Image (cartoon, rainbow, N blue to C red; front, side):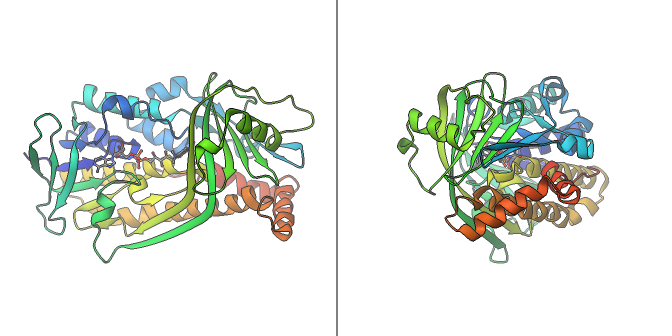
Length: 393
Ligand code: RFL
């Protein structure tokens, strides 16, 4: 078997690259360990930045999203039992789209496999990469139906297999991996309950951070700061809702609308960045190259940014022999990655400052928060980073 490009992983990054290649009639093979049903249901991100939606739209990948996504124009900080609305749309004219990741993945798989005729194998096992430093790399995997090993020759491998994939584990010595551990856990919850506000809420509370993120009229994502490595079983239905009511409470608002918890998992807040993102014929994209804790809801946006650049770069090279995009790929991605990492770190300080147990940090955190509502320059700078840097992708 031979394909110009093998893409490992059918997440937002891998599927977007596959779609860009197929639109230019470049053949590729996507290898995915999970089933199609599984990836179409896996709940995760929801907030997509405007430039990313525009990038999808330009590549014919946003029809459903534009028809069904909600537009968000404001967020609200709650601290000292008061609410403080932050209208980033008023300040900048820009907004966020809210479209659950499983819906985006469903759209991307359908377009890739059913409309653009892309090859994809689900449920593969034991993916291995070979000869990445040569110009004849290959990828092997075990076919789930026959149990046989398959070998696929290619020109390029796109490593899009997320934070727990295989491509990051085969990087050569020259790879530099920068890590940052916030030493904080978040209990990530999905509640079968309508949102209790029309916008995202951030509760900055001495008991810990709490977040409220509308996902659909029926489902709301919540977060609760907890010790890293905490056991979700420590969080009963009653304890979760008591803490959410307390941490997100505002004197002039009714209590949150409660509901059944359909997802409850602890995420340890940590980041990494792999530099460079290219090793021989292996190009990393998305969470395989860089993880940003969901503090600032940036991960999927970065994955899409990488995918636009890599998809376009591969098409230019494979159809016109123009290697410019591939040469500049790593630097162009990393600039945005570091920018978003810096914002996540800033936001983490704000979210976790009053619960740190350090009265000095609590004081400076509240000063930062108040400044957002008193200084137009501080508000403008926050809005710009919260919305994500605009780009021409
Ligand atoms: P993915 O989505 O993890 O996809 C990788 C795919 O590779 C498969 N795979 C393999 N395939 C073949 N061989 C192997 N050896 C393989 N190993 C793994 C996996 O099964 C999977 O299908 O990576 P990608 O494409 O880079 O996309 C990244 C995003 O999924 C991620 O950054 C976001 O979900 C992060 N994130 C958020 N990002 C945002 O931009 N906005 C948000 O609001 C937001 N909320 C979140 C989030 C992540 C969360 N979790 C669970 C960490 C909320 C949460 C709770």
